[in-house]
Amino acid sequence: MNLGVKGTGINREYSTYSGKDDPYIEFLIKDVSGGLVSPALRKLAIGTEVDMHGPYGSFTLDPEKINTSSYFFLGTGTGIAPYHSYIRSFPNLNYQVIVGIRYNSERYDQQDYESSRITYCVSREKGADLQGRITDYLKNFKVIPNHMFYLCGNNHMINDSYELLREKGASGHQIFT
Image (cartoon, rainbow, N blue to C red; front, side, top):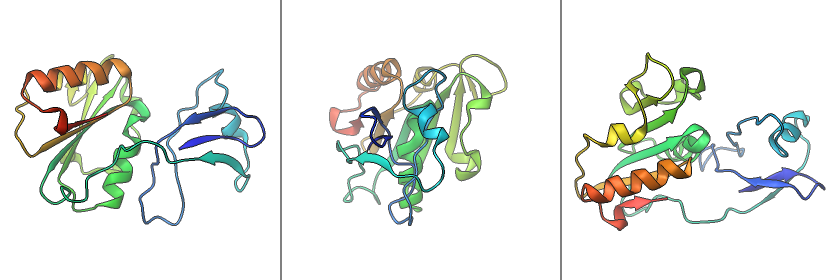
């Protein structure tokens, strides 16, 4: 979705965080100091009208594969937003979330995920499920045909993970960015 403060003409793209059947729409937005959109959105009072357009793109789950596939959601920072939406929308989904963050304090809404279904790859401090990056997690990963990989977040993570998954035998039809 394209979201911004009404009348400013300045907006950014955000993925939906809420579930498809929720009676509201929710976004996960990092408050960027000096940013043009996030600080302005933070200052708005609840109920203030915003500019919103979309959705755009096709970063969605295939309804025909939801019950037969194993989903691996790879995301950095707020790139976990669409996965939160998928999990809320499809509670019986077979999934694993692999999150790349710099610090443990960057874990968003941990209580929304079953602890056995989420792995944190923390690059700049110790005390995580995995010390390192998402690509470190993938190095020992075995790809099988019913795996579906969704990549969202930092462009370097997306490109590096895509290449690594392809090297491990994942087809282009199994990887979504």
